[in-house]
Length: 411
Image 1 (cartoon, one colour):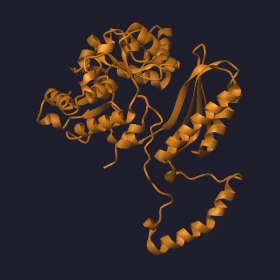
Image 2 (image 1 turned 120 degrees about the vertical axis):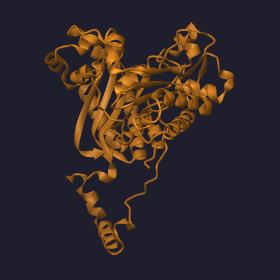
Image 3 (image 1 turned 45 degrees about the vertical axis):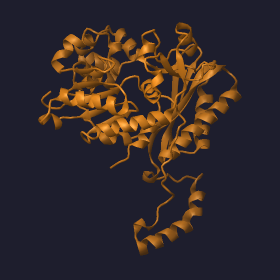
């Protein structure tokens, strides 16, 4: 750990812990944050450790959880409350260093390398953990390692309220015997692909033939092989939270849907949500993607990259619906989603003129000429095109929401 010392701060059962902090009467009780139990999409978003002790877990169906533990207390998500707690948590972390990288509402990386020149890493971690508990009444686990991958892995090793050091020299004993599915960054589909080439443990991935991995898994496979060997050169980047790459949303349907008009209406609703989020962040993107999941759990993604960027609901909906009708075979669907990616700030984008949009620009020409005259006389900063008012968006009410990033202003 001579080169870098990185913490991964992972708040324990964050939503449930925030609710218990807000209402002390909930402490020590089995509680769960959940969607609407009357709909099929009613799942457990997160739950307290008291609930987990009875076999309740995230993504469990609400009706199944209540059957397993009738006394389970169900609470609706309060995203504004969670955002406030998240903001306070990151403010505490930034009292130690500016090298803080939020990665979600309840976790982030902290590079404490400079701090360890005068203080021991364990002492700093212990102080952070105690401050978060004393000042916010929120528990966390902290992983300490020479890179982000190992720090993330370490924070998962002891919950709640754990502090774990993971060095590269320890991975052969601590990580290699584990199944690849337990490795951060590997999901079911990747694990299945690895199994098809007879790789089932992290150790087998770490020692696999590099050429074979590249042939079967591509660049991502080589990256995972490096991680399995404890190699990860990614820096802690405080500015990475501003680099939004995509904006999307999805919905699980209350019934397996085959009606075309109902599906079209849902695509319209999803497109409006995406458009609202793009507007709130002043973004536009050139790639529109759709996601579907059939009643037999087959996931499909289709996308198209356009000549011009889109941000308006009607443009997103039109493109998404064209993609859908082109590829849908009439099968019953249980989930649909819409995403706009390759996004950038509207102010940084130049629209490609076409026969369809040149008239819009022609109409603006007198205004642009006037703006040019004013700027030549008074300077470039005299006018701004539109108003930049940051909008708060609470469309998403789960841990998958990235709207909390709006709370992290550039200094």
